[in-house]
Image 1 (spheres, rainbow, N blue to C red):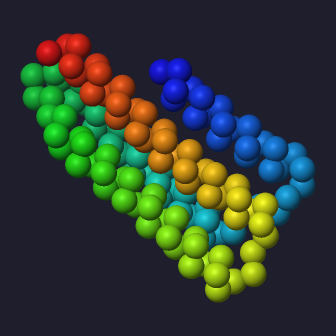
Image 2: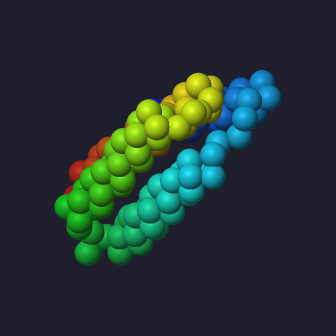
Length: 124
């Protein structure tokens, strides 16, 4: 829980600092990417909650596959941003914030699923 809190805190602080310093907002494609990551993560977390509510049918292996799908999605967004950075003029602060959000999102997903594994191990 502490690691999850640290990641969320880092996301909040870096986003606030970016806005507070008057830097440009993220590009539409970047915002769209972050919403896609949020939506996919929310679906898996809701499924996780549903599985915990029905402990008898808890299948952690399917969750781990879905976790990997989310991590692959984030990796694809990182690669996409690298390509955009090479081909388009972009703000270094904007790009830095976006990469930071992607990497922190990756850490958040990993930490949440680590907590799920620990919880499942302790209820078994």
